[in-house]
Length: 148
Image (tube, rainbow, N blue to C red):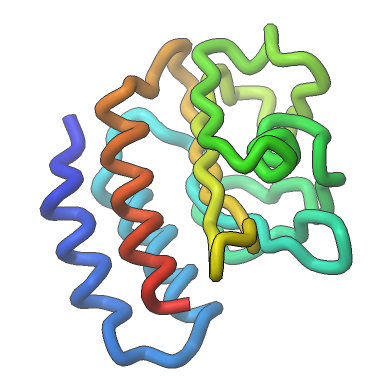
């Protein structure tokens, strides 16, 4: 089980006072990959010119662009809501970047109330992510938002 308060405190320590967005997202993805169990991808997509573009991540190569409203990530942006998907194979329009992924959680990242990107985490386990993960990752993202 992930200690989200510890992970969020570690994130704060890594990025406080660092004015480099890409470096902060890279360290955040490395921290997620290091501190979360049973995941196979952790990273970010950034809104750019009306679509999501791959940002810093840990895991296998991924889709470079995702249309807003498409897949789990694009749906999270379109609905401005966290998406907790127990079985990605049952999600309409799921975009399979890694065929080993079976569940996913995507948390919108906002600046001034506008979605500017998403945190995306995949797992090879079905139903890997819980409501506790949702709450912990939403707090993690709120900490990240303060430094973007």
